[in-house]
Image 1 (tube, rainbow, N blue to C red):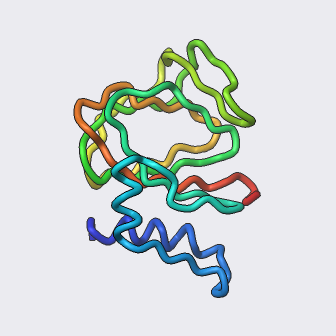
Image 2: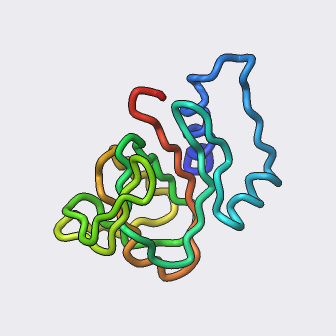
Image 3: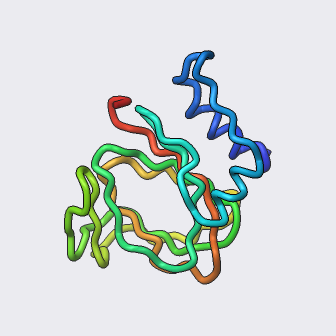
Length: 143
């Protein structure tokens, strides 16, 4: 079951596509994307990212995108919720910050799935070694 979950996440995201718009991502392309941490597919309504972290990041808030995260390798301390410190807009509907006051802290590991609703602050506060994870970003309203 654990090995099937990434495929299931991709299939769930692609269910909004018509048969004429099927997207196939070969394994070598996916592997290369995880080595650098980059998007696999970005279309209206959703995005699929092959994400890689080699350390902590900034606090993020996506005003319209819900993140569905599936951890493949590595571990991290993830903080969700709370109030963003040093809040600044970096792009339309994208906010970043330097810290979070409050929120819930959890350790995430391979096999874990985390759904982070749009508008929720989230922060990979500590990443002790490289971590790879799929992120399916579902757009509020599908646009």
